[in-house]
Length: 370
Image (cartoon, rainbow, N blue to C red):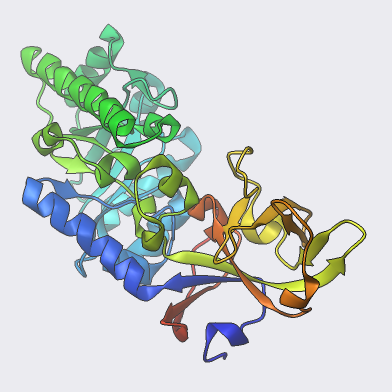
């Protein structure tokens, strides 16, 4: 195994351990002071080691996005797991297995069809289905719209069903990702929190018991508004790595971004005034804003370079303006790429190389699949 990141075969996904630990500690401390439970999302990194860090070593109270993640973390001693993807009928049996096995396993959905299916699948060992209602608070993705009377009706039906408990309401303010700067992020977060709290009042007025009301995203939890302290839980995830997207949104500083993709120069193309590197979309993903001056990513330490495009295995780099000096980028030389979206980039790599000041201290293996 390589001893330093410079010795790695490229492309390679590297993780700065100190930055990961710092990002985790900042979020833990922030919500401890607010008196709100942090339920970190595992979907960005999908590794046991990082989950341990994000939970402060407790291995309790996490969110996952796939059943593969749920079993992976359960098999490594994690508990109180919320499977926060709208439950589909084909996955009910597997969720029953986890619900009966763990102390706390939660499912989430937004429709009567799944509720009726759960009622036909009572759990063994006296266990209850622990259900979270997925609420759409103008995020425009999954969830039943918070203003619809049907949302209260569904909550009531869940709470009155035998063998089923309404554990919480879950709203994701993913529309913060369309913002620019702290003011816009906090405005969206405030609207989402207000919608959740208003919905809580509707349930209370209808005599429906629901112990937890939660929202969150990395932008909103990185720049929390005061009313976030009125929630029971928050569930950010990307903050553990951060990325160029979060930096551009205003969620973090560039020095908070904990991951890079290392790549090497493999070709000189003076007839096109370009470099070729061994980092294509299979090592980085094609996710980007599409109008960045720097292209699909930022080349660390080289603001004058632009990642113009990618094929499956090649990256195409040129200068933002002017002529390349190829003597500065000999074949085999190493470049460090700051990804636009760390979740998408991490998903491209079977191994993360964890380093401390450039020295490799561990390798992490993420779970894959669904």
